[in-house]
Length: 474
Image (cartoon, rainbow, N blue to C red; front, side, top):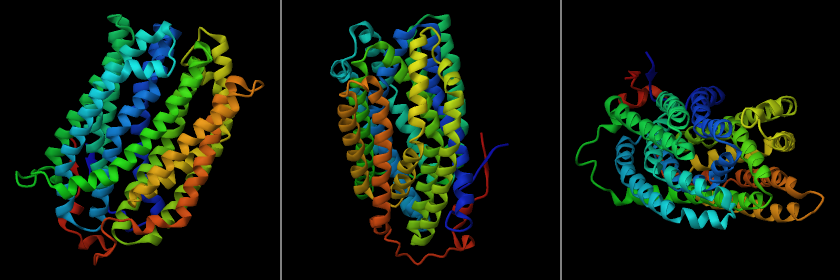
């Protein structure tokens, strides 16, 4: 039977902790990408390229809506990991209790705003009239699933903050498989088109949220809260917003910049739109190792900065950076030799789209290390509570996409290729800014615990609840 346990990352090999923690996250992230990939594959092969463009043009906007609530989940996870590293059990439980109020309120608000604003946003993005109706249907339907996404992300972030990266994976796999089955049923059997794809996605998201919450309540002691603990605590809620809102705004600004770039893409017509959709889906897969490492580094840094061990945080960063370099170099030949095969998984009926997308993947693969060096420093500084950096990071990506897009696509000889040049240049620029912030060292003084507690690094000194060995998966 599968097991779950909390993990103390303040002792032992940093590389071993990070890799062991990141591997389940990587598998989970890959399964999570099935949501978007299966949507695109099913739509592109069984509905048509117009429908694929409609789904793709909603990607950055959906990311904007989702990030407003998921950013809060990350902030909550940071708080839990720091209190856990500082051996403060009472505040761990208080943070979990109040996280539900924060997440549900944010998700309901964003869901409503997103549903109402969808047509106006798509017009700003210059979505062609030929796919406007399908785009509105897809985006409005997925907005209804934001509550499910926020709840799953919140519970998963808390479990990961406690060192358990496996449990969220199990439920994510189940919901991803449900999404595949529902996609095929709604599109092939019932002929619901893009509405069916969106409906399958939100149902699968609610499945992951409900099952993960049921498990956490049954098997993780921190989630069995008393009525007294469930009373709203203003200081904890304020702290959650203080850390979570900058991270949410960071993601939101990145989403806005992606929306602006999507607007540029839309101006080049449906063939380029479809090619951009395909490359975005493939690059989402490429980003998963970086995302997984960043999440592992967030938990690792949060626990160690909570324990006041700055040098151990730095050691973990160096080892994570080496992992990014190795993976980035390995992916270049993959895209040069196998890029076309990857593209043809998504689209077969438009040879021009295949050619454009294949060349674009070769172009952006040269900048993957820059992309990785956005994620790892971001994960570290989020874990240490450096909220100011979140805003700096977001502003850099917005400026990069806006400025580079205007410059590159404005050169006639470059044309629509400027879209992918913009992507690569933005990754490299933002990665450099992240490294500068890291070496400035402001993150060393941002821990909410202040690193001032008298804390023993010997795991046997921790209360039994923190070292509870393996409760079985339902």
